[in-house]
Amino acid sequence: MATRSKSTLHIRCGQDIEQALQEAGMEGDFLDFSDPYCQGPVRGIAHADFLVERSAFIASAYGIDPAEVTARQSRRYEALRHAHDYDTITLWFEHDHFDQLILAHVLNHFADLSSLPEIDLVCVDDYPVLPRFTGLGQLGPSDLKAVWEKRVRVTQDHIRLGKEVWCALTMATPNMLATIAHAGTPAVPPMAGAIDRHLDELPSSRHGLGLTETLSLRILAEKGVISAGAMFSQLMLRYETRPYLGDLMYWHELDRLVRGGAAEVVTAGKTYAQNMLRLTELGERILTAGEDWLDYMPEPRFVGGVEIAPSKPHWRRFPKGNIKLVE
Image (cartoon, rainbow, N blue to C red; front, top):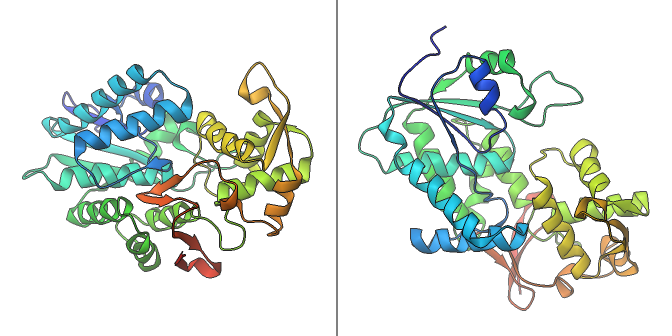
């Protein structure tokens, strides 16, 4: 198996497999291109403004120093800009919408180039690991070799799909993204399901909650008083069909529920993970559709390019996946 090259770039949305790739003998440079498009604004604006807006969101939402975030994001986007300097590129992604939306951006980036290096895609939606497959970070060196053997060569069909999905994601309306998910994405089969899961973060027609918010309140309703860390574990192992959140990302979701009064911190811990939470009476009424969460949500939020603002017309997801604008 030829796995050695002096001019190979491995692109992954995280550092979770970097060491294992080295141990597997997969030589080359490694680019961690991570920007969690599954949270915060992802709008179709000028690139410089886009970077400023994304960096500001990441710093604020995850409690990271703004200068550190800006520098890191600038390095990542600049490195992607020079990716075509390599002879070969391997893209390593899994099936959740954290990964798939980043993959769409990476493929869209290559759409603007007049000539491309050889690009391979490793896209994994399942693997026999316990308790269940949630991501490539679970795989060891031999496993990564096995999935690499099943890589596919990126073609213009992949590039076109990436461009189409990225354009739809950055729109202020979700219709085109929903159309893509409904039609399917044969070039990258897991992408359609990932888009559909992303659209589940739109407010439900029933109670105004996105799916992550709904699952979080269900956990509180079932468990009573529970730590934030235990909630995160329950979400990953039992409730979420396509786990995509990191812990800092999940604290951002929980904090919004607390500030809006749907959940409350009973005992503050030394870390956010140690905070003990419970469902409030308001949270119970919202969960049972007696109240609308958008009447209490503490500030507007974004699902890709779609802004959810209580005081304005907003998009809601109805049963069977229908999406409508509600005045």
